[in-house]
Length: 283
Figure 1 (cartoon, helix red, strand yellow):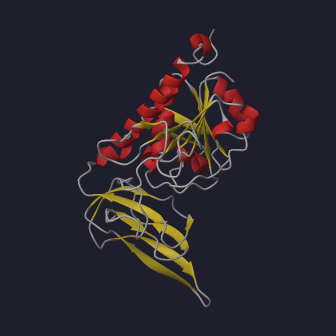
Figure 2: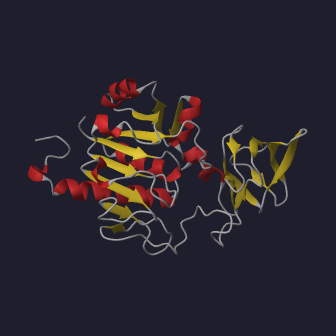
Figure 3: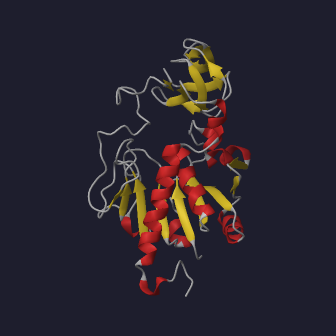
């Protein structure tokens, strides 16, 4: 299929990339897990796995019934999503480009030979060995820089730390135990430090209990995991921003836009060097 780019991961950054590529005229298929755990859901296409479709800044992503359905709708120009965390469909679809936007800080099966051109975000990948290009995701001077040899910075603030990993995580809320999340506050509402914003239902040996989920700082609840999802202890379940306006919860972030633009640059730079500059199939 001409102009096809596969993006692994439909979270905040993967969605920013998919949005940018779609607006630039490419066919985009997003691969997700069956029950995504993204918290920035108002700007993430991953919610399509639960709702059937979701919209981010006037671009709608649809959940495909199967791979055949995805192919048909991709040809019509729709942004599509399927459950395929292991990227098994890549071998059949043979996309020109595969972008790994899982942002797990480790490689989950990404290989350089998966497509003619491969791109990955952040730590966990070696440019030139695992993929063709690595995009720097750490905030600061080098955010969005394209790396063609070696690794991205491990010391930069990549914005999605876990407990004990990053000192700049007071705005994040983590699960204190294994359980099922019940959110009491919706995204974009103002919350106060110590306020109960949800419950974590755990199942003990004798009876089910509920642990209070409390806001860690004052601010806008800009992200929360999908209600009813089972989580593990230490997993991120909510995100609070101290200065963000409520309307900004519904628009793509500066970081996601920057990285989306960088991925588009990497794609076009590679395409310009291909024989006859055929622009994804056009002679």
